[in-house]
Image (tube, rainbow, N blue to C red; front, side, top):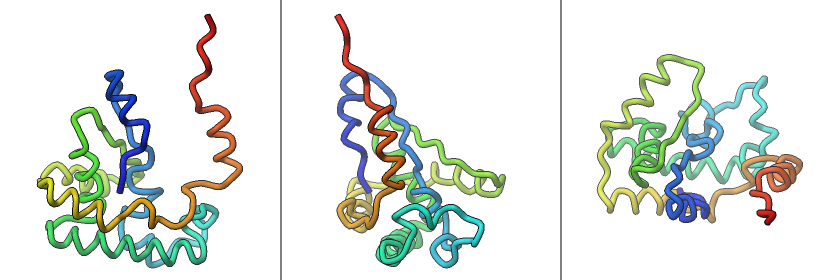
Length: 154
C-alpha cells in the first residue's frame, strides 16, 4: 500500500488528503469480493478485477487478511487504520451502502499500529505488485485531461 505522489505537495501547501477509494473499489472490503464477484457488478470491467490481474491481486488480499487476523480486526479495518496512520492530514472516506459495514469500518480507530506494523503492511501489499490499472483506459484519459491543475495565466 502506498500514498500517492501528490501527498508531498498537499502537505507542503497545508492541504488535507482524502485517499480515493480506500478499499480499492471494495477489494479490501471483505472476502466476498475476492471469492465471488456478483454477476450484476461492474467490477469485472476494471482491469484489477479481471482475468489474470484478479488472480494475482487475490494473493495480496490473502496477505492482508492474515495480517488482519494478527491484529484481531477485519481487512477493511486494517486498511483504514493503515491510511489513518499516514498522518493527521489524511482522512479516508470509505463508501458503503450498509449500516453494518459503517459500524465495522469505525472499528479501525481501535486498531493501533506501530511503525513496524505499518512497514509490514506496506511490504505485503507492494504497490509495484498490484496487477492492472485501477480504472479503464478511457477513464484514465479523461482523468488526465480534466484533473490536472490548469496553468496559471498572468
